Image (tube, rainbow, N blue to C red; front, side, top):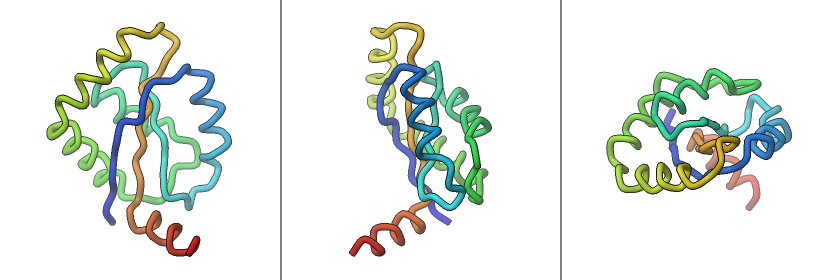
Length: 111
């Protein structure tokens, strides 16, 4: 399986948890959202443990994808660190990890 990872933005904690409850009840979904109070790789990796109804993915491969993103997108990460510093403490950095094969199947089903 192949995975993709990206940082999406900063949001209030309550907003993230409401959204996560609505979207993440399906263990066969193509994406999972991660929230971390810190803009760190460790924080996002720990967030994978908090996913409700975790999809049946190769989570070692997911973490490897996250590490590769972190190593190759330093300017992007620095931007999010600055963004988080300008918000209050009650915010989370939000990232998305997706199973590209399942995501492709979902898009093909739409057509």
